[in-house]
Amino acid sequence: MADTRIENIRRHLETLVGERNPFSSPSALHAAAGYLEHQFRMLNLSVLTEDVVYEGAESKNVLGVLQGEEKGAPPFVVAAHYDTVEGSPGADDNASAVAALLEIARLLGSAPLKAPLIFAAFTLEEYGFIGSRHFIEQARAAGREFSGMISLEMVGFSSAKPGSQTYPAYVDASRYPDRGDFIAVIGNEPSARLTQAVAWGMRGSAPGLAVEHLVVPGRGDLFREVNLSDHSPFWQNGTPAVMITDTAFLRNPNYHQATDTLDTLDLALIDNVTLGVSGFLKSYLGSSHEP
Ligand SMILES: [Zn+2]
Image 1 (cartoon, rainbow, N blue to C red):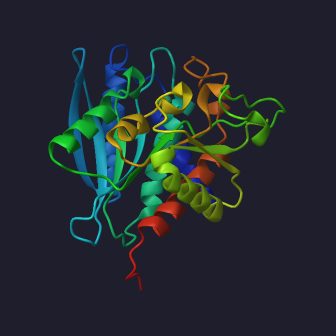
Image 2 (image 1 turned 30 degrees about the horizontal axis):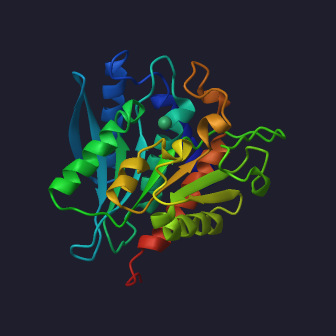
């Protein structure tokens, strides 16, 4: 089982890693979108796309939807952005999370769910959450709401070296590990219950994974580091949302560099995140009439 998961994760990474930027490598960005659409279809998800235009560059959000049993129940969203900054192959940022997203979708399979689950591959996160903002604006205009959201943001880098983990000044570092070998679940106050549920669910489903969680005060607007992903537009919309992350530049020296390559990744960490998040989703959204 673990072998199959790791093999799938590696195959997704080998396909995706490489600069995927709307201005310097648009064909790679479009190819990644095509790959995601194809993978979602192979998993029998209903596929929707949303065209996003930003400064003349066209790209799209790719959404795979797993239906729920209860009519009208608001969907839950699990997301990862698939674009990169210019000049980086984006292995950790964010091919790691896209690979996890695809493997989570496979593990959910045709699990009976109460509410719909949307697997969202967002475009242009690197330009200020353009894709996820577009998604939220479309939903708001149509009067659609979401029960919650998880943003997978860099889930593939670890280090067991003492001192390899750093923290922003507003986090009490003495309460957290100084080695970067855990995964973090970050929420704001309106998302406090979801943050706890995700952290507990992940610990229960992936015993080999160290999970730390943090709830920042208020809506979290004042804390730059914890806002840097696609959950941010959901926070602004009032939707409970968490970011699951290896903490990016607080740990990974290859962040936004040409050195963010596949060989620097910890595939066992990505596998554990996949296991943890899929286990959480099955119990959190699982149907009560399951046989
Ligand atoms: Zn990112």
